[in-house]
Image (cartoon, rainbow, N blue to C red; front, side, top):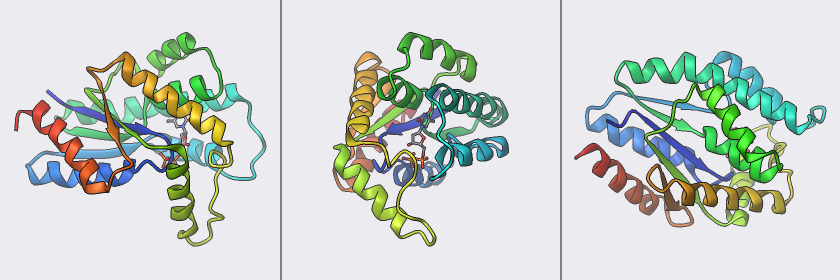
Length: 213
Ligand code: TYD
């Protein structure tokens, strides 16, 4: 049974495009799907997301940032993900526990074993059935993100994370790759530097196999 699928990866790796393509595909197969994301998958989460991602806000410490992501997850799991899975829906989620490991752990240097425990509390122990890790060189991902934001009216082309140094994003990328190596049965590594239809073909193949299509 596949009920909970997460998408992970650095900024600009095309997660939302791939989630959209997979959702359309699954609906065409007659599946009932819910698409959601972290941070911001609940109304409380929207407030937390705004606090986390706005440019020009007061600086926040790494621990504060960590607890806001965990608070967002704790609410999201209980309010959205668990009820949807219980109704037999397939939940497609943009970012989850691996993002905390990669950004707050590998990126900011917070102890990884501690993060495993905190993630366990926040997620109530709910693990994804499949995680797609969309991987591409940091420079490609960031330039895609800046382009996308520049096309959004009123957006400066940056947010707090995209202001981080390349070095930070490189650590995050290597962290994600390490997580994929540690749990190959759950995490499926996808080369996201290819055209989007090729990336989707790789994702679809795994989903078809796991769902027995
Ligand atoms: P978002 O605009 O959703 O980025 P993207 O479109 O690339 O997914 O911003 C989410 C940001 O939050 C992203 O830079 C990663 C960060 N993040 C963490 O640092 N820790 C977490 O646990 C989560 C869920 C996200």
